Every structure is written in structure tokens, then in C-alpha cells.
Amino acid sequence: MKWFIHIFQAVPLLLAPSRHRWKANPFWLIPVVVVASMARGMTLAPRIQVYTDIACRAVQEPLSHLSDECTSLPEVQQGAASLQASIMTVMSILSAITTGPWSKLGDSVGRKPIIFASLMGALSLDIVFVFVTTENSFFSAYAEQLLMFGFVLDGAVGGLSSFNGVVHAYMADCTEHGSRSKIFSTMQGIVFIGLALGPWGGGIALSVFKDDPYLLFRISAGLLITLLCYLVFICPESLEKDRRIINSDNLRSIPKISLLSLRRAATKLSAALLSPIAIFTPRTVLGSARRDYNLTFLGVGLFIYLVSIGIYQIKYLYAKHIYSWTSSELGFYMSLLWISRAINLLGFIPIIVAYLKPKPGSPNFSIYSEMHFDQRLAQCSLAVDGLADALVAVSGSSSPAVFTALSCINSFTSGGNPAMHSLGAVCLHASGTSAEAGALFGAMAVLSAVAHAISPTIYAVTYGQTVAYFPRAIFCLAAALLGTTVLLLGLIKSQDPGNAYAPVRTSVEEGGEEEEAL
Figure 1 (cartoon, rainbow, N blue to C red):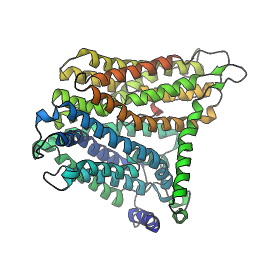
Figure 2: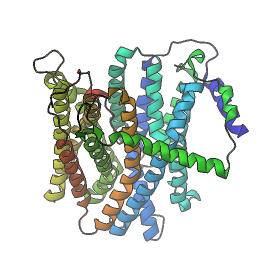
Figure 3: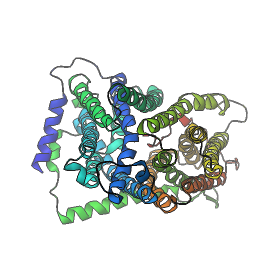
Figure 4: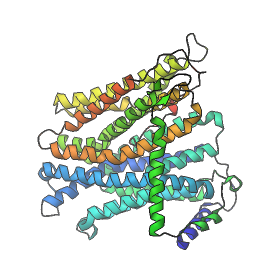
């Protein structure tokens, strides 16, 4: 493990400027977030094309040119969905395992080395895509294996979850407590702006150079290399040495890897994943013999919802298959979804909360009026989301415009997730245990990690088995899951039983939103 220790002793020195020039500020991260999101946004559509091409090559010879007839075959669609599910599952599991250790390491070596590692993981994945999309090369013959290797590299450094975590940690280091919520929500909107700009920038690049969607992987790699240079030479470190929890020399205490240590690590990992979920078990109401199931219904509903949003990756494959969209057209479609989500999170939801959510000091205000508002907001958002999926399933429309409009409605209801996070905090406070808020959000993060690990397989199997005769079955599944979540949220008792606690401020905007967007 000596090489591991030396690397992390050298990285902080590499990323530290020779003298302190600028003071850390969240605005230094705007180029990092925008450019990283643009790079990811412009390559998501070409990735769908790569998965389809690999599946087609497994079915049809020769390998030099893949016809539209081949890519539309049901067995090809099934193979592409299976490939996408397998690599996304592996990456989700690795990200869930490694995000915590990487985040903890950032408390001792600083934030920039962790951001650097996350960007290197994304860069290595783009380079792998460049290799496997080079025609008649040695790498294209082993495209599936190399892609899995690339996603393993990206997952080993925490993937997108680690990047998001360290970005939030950087902002927290140099932001006052009272203004963090606004900074976090603003940066979340900037993420969606970057994602939306990616496909448009990629489309312009393809019109200027050559109409080859695989060129976008090279452009993305160039953007990430430029971003790494900005991080090394310009962006200041937010965590000063005197504020770091442990010294880098403590990395020497890393134990040697052995079979026994791996078994112990697996046991600790299982305990770390399962023990937080215990907060969702029914609890006895203080001063009463009755049981409170509010958090239980919320936890189950949140998990089912998080599984339902796994449809997005397969939805892209479905759109490309049904409407024969090019990678550029699919990229513009994704961009519209991200724009809808940004408008909802940065405009519509804040207005709803500002004007309709009960405020302390208003007549008839209580913790239960807050709970009722969050409950109804989450239910309405998820009900409209499920309705849009159901309309896609039953309409049978071959119109891309109708499909795009219904998809934008899906994205415009993205306030359901943050509303459920806010509802969980209010339910916890109403039960008299508001001190466990950190444990609650940690448990929600565990549910998210597990859901993101299993949802790709669920949708891939469904799509692969039904694409030949009813490809819209995935929308039926998503609508059923969302409907179940709405019913479970309806079981939460938001009426005052006569034993209310003092109200606390909760914010829908502070809730988490998936990546799915990302």
C-alpha cells in the first residue's frame, strides 16, 4: 500500500499553489460545475448509440457498418438494455461503496485532490469511449469489456455522487451557515444549465466539423483536461491545513489487504447499509401506546419512487429505437428535459413554497400544517409524473412531439423528491425526535444507493422482454410504481392528534434531487 500513500501525499502538493493568491469562494466552482456538466451532457446521447452498436455487432456481421435495420431489431434492443443495465449497476454499487471513504479523505487532504480524482475518473471513461469507438481498431473488438473497465474506474473514485459530495463540501467550507441553502440550490440549478448546454454545444460542434456523434467523446475529454488545468493552477483550496481533521501522515495507518480484512470490511459495509434504515421502523408515540407509521410509509414510498426514476436511461434507448433519432436529436431531447427540471426547481417550486406553504406566526400554523403541505406537494408532483408515464403507455402515439411534451411534464414534476425529504424532516420532528435528522437523511441516501443499484436491471429486463411486442411496458411499470408511492404518502397522518411539538423551519428546496438528473 506504499504506492497508495505516496500518491495521496503528493497530490495535495501538486494541487497547492506556490503561494496563496485568492481566497476560496463558491464562485470558483462555477466553471468546474458548468464544464463538467456540459461534458457529461454532450456524451449521454452518444453513449446510447455505443450500447446499440455493440449489441448490433453481437448479432450481425460484418462489423464495419451498422444499418438502421440492425439497430431496430428486438434482440439488439434487448442486448443494448442489458449492457447499459450491467455497467450502470456496477458503477452504482462502486459509487455507493467508495463515496463515503473519498468524502472522508477530503477532510484530511483537502477538497481539490478529491475533485481532481473525480474528474480523472470521468476523463478516463471518456478516453475508453474514444478507444472503443475507433473503427477497425484492436479496442473496438473488446468494446464491452473495456466499457466495463472504464465504468469501474469511474466508480472506484466515487463517480458522480463523490463529485457532488465534494462540491457541496467545498461550498460549505467557505460559506456562512445562514446562506448555504441558497448557495446549494443555486449550484443545483447551474448543474442543470450545464447539462442542458452540453447537447446544444455538441450539436454546434458537429455542424462545424463532421457529423460524427463519437467526436463528442474527444471534445468532452478536451473539456475535462482544460478543467483539470484550471483546478490545478487557478482554483484555490477551500479547506485550510489548520482546519483538516487529521494529518495526511495518518494515511500510513492504512491496514494491509488480506482475506480477513476484506471479510471484515464486507461485514462493516453490510452494517453501514442496513443499520441506518432502522429509522424507518414504526415508533411509539410519546405519551401514548399507539404506533407512528409515518416514517415507515415515507421510507417505503421514497424507495419505490427512487426505483421508478430508473426509467430515464431506458427511456432514452426507447426514444432512439421508436423514433429513429440521431444522437444529436436525442441530445436535444435530453436538453429539453433538463431545462424543464431547472425551471421547475429554480422557479416554479420556490414560488409555490413562498406563497402557499404555511409560515410560522400565521393563523392555525402548526407542525402538522407544514406536514400536510409537504405531503400534498409530493403527492401532486408524483401523481402528475405517473399520469404522464401512463399517457405515454396508453396513447400509442408515434408522434415525437407528443412524447417530448409528456417527457417534459415528467421533468417538470421533479419537486417530488425534495418535497419527500422535507416531509421526512417534518414527520421526524412531529414524532419528537428531531435530533435524528442527520440519521434520517443518511438513511435516505442509503435507500437512494440501493434503488439506483437495482433499478437499471429491473427496467432493462422489462424492456428486453417486451420490446418486440409492447415496448411501452416500461412506462406502465413506472406509472404503477409512482401510483403506489402516491398511495403510501396518502397513508401518512398529517392531522394534529392534539400533541404537536413546536414547529421548525424546513425547506423543500434543501431536499435531494437524483442523478439522474445527473
